[in-house]
Image (cartoon, rainbow, N blue to C red; front, side, top):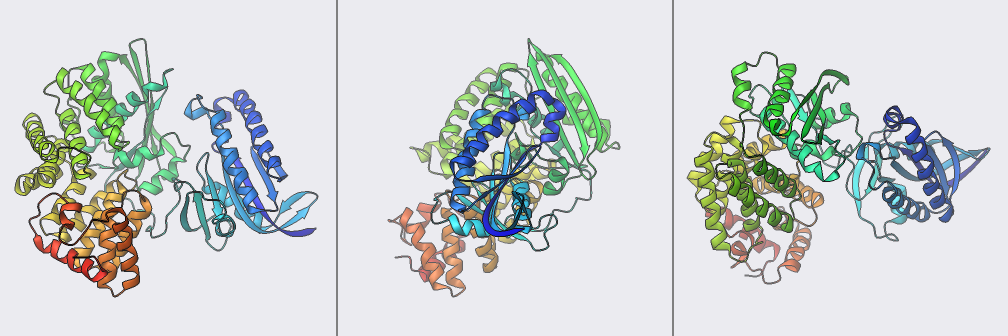
Length: 587
């Protein structure tokens, strides 16, 4: 038995048992091809394959740099090799790397160093890489990669938590530093609707499958008797092989709905299954078939079946109301679903593309309120981010669209919340905007977006305590939201104005970590919070980051730079300016 200090690379295939169950021969053939790629990368970077068993590989390197370079190169090649294969059939490896002491016996690696690498690998997503703190320390200055600190991770059979770092974004199942405990279940039936798989031969039909799941989610969310997780959290698992029990723990729900959509030759087939996330036991499953023009009827049938499986005491009248058709125009609906796929990518060009598609949708069906809501959201988002050449015209257009949408759908919570946000945040019509948002949350208390926009608007009218309460509700309904960094920033601002400065610092820091390229507001509130808590060096450092982005910023023009909208509570502006003055911002 020999001992030595090495960099250990542990890899195995994500979801291997499921893959072999679906197609054993095809999976083993693809595994052989993928192993050839991985083995070649290990040899190129002077590694030695020590142990192999089934779909797993264990290798040692004398250098952590070589091990990480090997992992990065191999993952890219492995992903490229499976391009074009269906998402649920791809053979992809998860990789963990640790630098530690191991025992060597007959060429095999043994000991705690191997166990840690294996546990890190289990934390990674398919195609992902997770490092221990010891490995990260060896490579962080030499390899300029994007590292995400995951903090201490509790892993199986390792007594002490393992401090971990991901290369790239955090894995879906990792708890980030500062995150709370696992979410407790609500006091009523709770459900997350995952993105449905596109089983059509055309990968471009992904948007259609997403749209089907989104419509079913929207129907379910109208029931007060249900606690429904927002799409922007539940869809983060799309294309990933994640145990449904883990999803239930991470989102804090009792049930998970998953399914698939096949569209071919004018025919539709929607399958769905409802799983008890605590036990992994299937509660309900069914298949629905019909012609393409029957899409709304199919959605209705799936939504009704799920509701009756989760909460059998819900009255049939509520089911009937929840599944009302959005539009009679299939072409308009198709444009709307394509636009929705663009909106959830959130980039400037994506929103511009979405606006074009929504305009076509509205032209085909001028009474399609959901399309108006999408157009309002795109326009408002561009205005608040200064992605416009004519701020005044676009802001006025936002108000026009908002009132048109409300006239078309006065009882649609999603439409009301977006219209209310637009009128209050973009047009400074606070009373009208808040009234619409309040109607939205009364109609659908499960709508995370309504609670979030309510929080934003309440800050601007000088009620940060209410903003905190409403923002917490939004984050509970959508704990993995695609705009989670904005929710965090909103929490930071609300805590700042409430005088809860340590919490403001924590939330600002998390917002910046969650989205490094969308953090200007968080930097300002972070600098002011540091200044008020007598931490001048940190305040000066944070302010310097903002001034590097906006060198022309001064206290005299700050509000125009950071927020073009009016506010009902000017004392908020004064408090922020006071903090920034202490931090050192020029007059």
